Image (tube, rainbow, N blue to C red; front, side):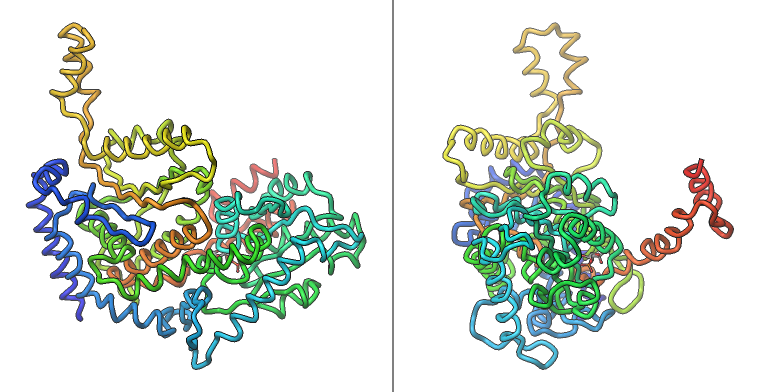
Length: 544
Ligand code: F6P
């Protein structure tokens, strides 16, 4: 298909939006008794409900026309075939291979990678079991009670998010800690709690050159050496990387080095050996369930018809809001405290993937790309930024995530949590008119003058769209499904926007400049000549 066909499909959506503008979502429910069933997709014990978006069947048809005009099906096939979809880095993007538990060959770059993937996973599992069982000990002969993952971006957010999400599955395991920031406060606060003789450090870095990770790893190494001597390093460090040569230079024992491949992007690497800290926390069986959840979604994404395909629908609804309705942000609100880091994880996944201004062929993009993703767990967010979501001048589409059943036995807490989630999505859709606000105030016995003065402040526009992802309970398989859904949603959107979601050149410039500035900042006498006046002025001010 050609891009003119895409532009045509987008124009048709814009015309359709004008027709819908005079409608109310509530009226759409009144007109169609089957709306909840039509605008929802069940997937085993999972339900994606998008009936609270102001869309009708024709909207979906037009969005699917857009997907077809963008060649979504061919691009999806190329992704799963292990083609070089990341053209600027000459790589496939085959993180799905890591969670493919079938027996089929996994051909990437002309080689069946299945044996290598399985071998690496077995190595991770054996190590995780040995740490969990206490059979692999530190230099002083003591079992490990604490595991510190040192990494940043995809080498941190995935394992940190998932370990927190699955904490009930980690009972009796060593405690896990995550150090990412180059701010020395991060590692100092972590080390302050730890006994070096009982601590294992995992240095996680795809490239093994990332400044933050290397600085933190050096500090952790010094901590171990100071307490236990140089020889202890081999017993207290493990590493995960694609750059085995660089790991060897650091001094990690080769039996504790876990690899992965350049066709696994950092933000897609939780499924690989980067998940080592998670595997130690929850154990191999739960880790396999997590992989299985990812594979469920791969199967669904590959085979479900486009109008019943959850990541396709999530992606297309996002395009509708971003490109047709002009919404610049998107909130993800898990009513699930253990998913507290999920929005941060998605920020990297979505914004690093699709925060692009250049199309695949190098020309400027035709449409606005990724919205700003943000979120916090509900109900906490309700008492913080929800005011803006309800009554602010911008409309922000929301994904609500909630479990049908809690992990904890306490039914009362979960009933309150669940009701709040539903109440919010209802309030966003329903809103409150001026007349309704006045009627409510009169009922409270307020004088008419006060009713007139107060009522405008109590109006909610309504028609603020949200999806609800309802899952049975937050277990490893569910988490795998959630992560894979958002991965494929980002992919779908990248296809519509015709961008490469698998590179991240936008992070380079800041890294280069930080590398140039560090010696100037570190040495009081270094010249600031050649720097812009603001940068030079700030350095001078720091010097005092
Ligand atoms: O700076 C961005 C980034 O390259 C991410 O894409 C990546 O997840 C992160 O840095 C960490 O990279 P590495 O795993 O190579 O240390």
